Image 1 (cartoon, rainbow, N blue to C red):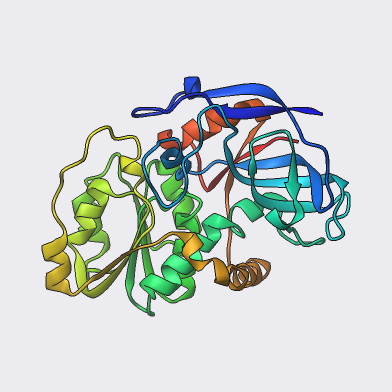
Image 2: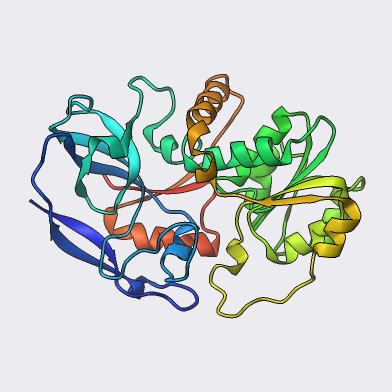
Length: 332
């Protein structure tokens, strides 16, 4: 059986374009005991994938040129040689970007039948982005009632969950986003303050929104926003360094204010993390996020693009700020 496959055509230097992707037909292997044939339903596109398009050493192996790209996928079992995954099951896993694929049963997780959440949420709120927010905020930032939390990239899949979790902890929450529409959505989600970093004076807006300083900073963006936050850090502030999307397409090493003196003077803690660091605790995170969602305490947004052929456009849209919440591609 052949299937439509999206491969990495070449490695980008700077901002990627559609030319760095290629669609081709690839032959699938025959099913073996313990494997399943999966039909892709939803594909996740995420900013970290830009790093995997480069050959530079990182926390995860780079994509190989002329080989399928891969990422979070929700799929349906259409043929099964598995004793645990019957035909009709919905599963989630890190899978190749193909319309159909053959996968070992142990490489995917079963989505519970009768789940109150849409299946695509297992790529967002109840998947990697939600878990990133859960562990980064609650394990690293540890906000206390009445403290001030700043979230950059707050209208993204991770950031909007971070802000809501911080509110559940009794914190005061400030978010930055890249459009007035996104700012309005953050205020609907319960953020105390939010502003458009593209049109506002970032330093002045942050200072006005955080008159008592910043106790926790969840950094998804880096760059000028982070520089401004560092000037407002309180004693023993905690910073969860999650992403640096403002720098992902840079072709030169940026030079900015060096933060060490500010961290030293405030006895602040800066900790970078990758959500896979918490892999043994993922079931805990999924259970708690599911409970809060079922109780109506968490909302989540998706930007859905339809069609397997539109995966590259959905991915490239991340760097233009086209998504609110999680960007997913609905394949079937």
